Image 1 (cartoon, rainbow, N blue to C red):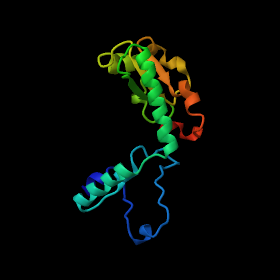
Image 2 (image 1 turned 45 degrees about the horizontal axis):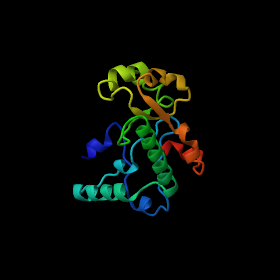
Image 3 (image 1 turned 90 degrees about the vertical axis):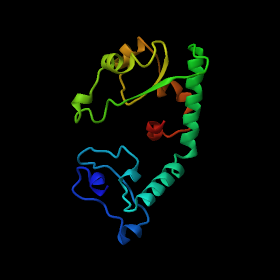
Length: 176
């Protein structure tokens, strides 16, 4: 289990007395390389006893959460997307969602840079029926990128709901 946790890293951060005595532990990506922490920080924790490991990770999963302002803003958006889906013909207000990263990692992972046409033809057309409402979470600024998807789906973006998130700090939009 320890070797699996190590993955490609050269060393691990060991929780010892020095770390235990810290008032704050900040898990951050490496700014020099551009790598970011893209999973829950507790995935990096290692407990020798697998039962304790499971207990602590479940505890964090179940009790660490976003602040109420973010939770409530997200709930308002979900409610609005469901209403738009109903207006689009889905009586249950069901919708699909895409998370399409365009800004970060594109220089590192060129083989993962897909066009909207590729997303549709290779990934979604056999899974998501044409005409469905799709919420797109993205960092892509140019909406023209999504035109091929818009030909098949009713696309919605965070920017369509600015009136619902006026009380949210724009630095927290990525959590919505």
